Image (cartoon, rainbow, N blue to C red; front, side, top):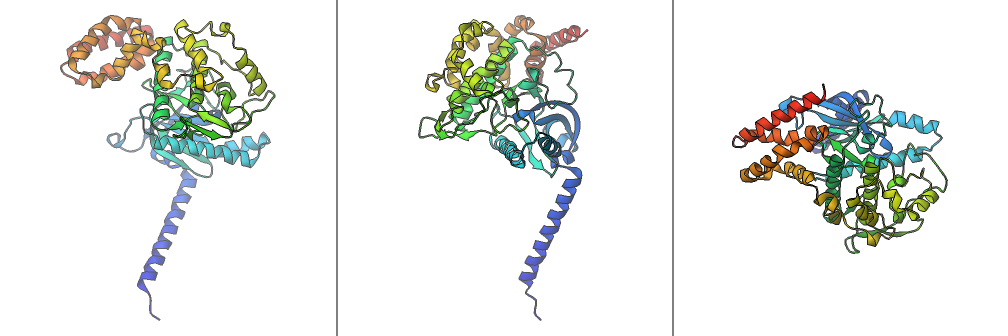
Amino acid sequence: MSINMKTLTQALAKTAAVIEKTVQTTVQEVTGPRALQDYDLLDQIGSGGPGLAWKLFSGRPKAKPSQAQYPLVCIWLLDKKALSEARTRAGLSKTAEDAFLDIVRADAARLVRLRHPGVVHVVQALDESKTAMAMVTEPLFASVANVLGNFDNIGKVPTELKGLEMGQLEIKHGLLQVAESLEFLHSHAKLIHRAISPEAVFITTSGAWKLGGFGFAIPADQNSGNSTTIQSFHYAEYDIEDSMLPLQPSLNYIAPELVRNKDTQIGCAADIFSLACVAYHLLAHKPLLDCNNNVKMYMNRLMYLSHDVFSSIPPDLVGDLQRMLAVDSLSRPTALDFTASPFFRDDTRLRALRFLDHMLERDNMQKSEFLKALSEMWKDFDIRVLRYKVLPPLCAELRNMVMQPMILPMVLTIAESQVSSHL
């Protein structure tokens, strides 16, 4: 009997592929997702994403440091087994669990595709086994939800988060960065996020505020004024706790056009409303629409927002927030309009931080003039701003031998002030 060598080769290749896949699957089930094989898991630093379902850990690459993009990373871990057990105890369906995991997968896929300084940078894409999901990103400090005191899904709260109070300048800088990221999302990526909230905004270890939580994002129809027709979310008309499997965004931060129970035009303005709710929460230290996911309470609070509600908000921001919170989406400003608010524009300290953000792009003459001003101004910054937003760019600039004589004394003085403040 003659042997067809081509057929035999193809059969052997198929068999080898099946064996390789079987081995990979077996290894994965034993060791977990790829991230847990390639990185050492360190302390948990926070939680984030829809329902704060992701546990965020600091991690260190097992590869040689010279081969790694970051010396430390953030490992996102979701325990599917624990989620399934909790879902069963809560009496929720397997269908709801599967739908939630699909939202998580959609979020992770968007993060990989969106390349922008204002979006969390993925180092290693989502990988999953039967019992866990994991992905790796640039190093993070925490989610904004954690900073606001929501420690759900955190085993042991990190010392850095306990009693943390952010100053207005740091919040202002963070909100400006989020607004600029939304401008990119709306004008260039042509996406509507639909779930801007504290659990979808993350702070890196260098103090930058970045967007995540893209599980509910949809394309904006370019031919209809950056809006698209889609079925609204459906919320109950009675008080319910936040679900452990949130299949829709939190009602505390969502725009009214996403709540109505009918098909409606959804535009980028929905994200502007949500951004205003996040800004309010950060500055007033409480949610604007704290409604227990009760749509009736939500509508009542939205319709009867009095001027007194804004008494704890800086006066130069009140007008902008009120326009961003307009029930009529067409009356809301764009993300770009918001970045031009007097709240940002008239703050010289914020302008200094913005210069530091882009310091490496400036010429030596510009840097010299700036450093002269900064030598007097830095004393007005609080400890966190100095540590996360001033010292890192100044230290990076120490490689510039021309500027080193001006920068080094200032870095040493600021560093000394940091040490003294902790004594």
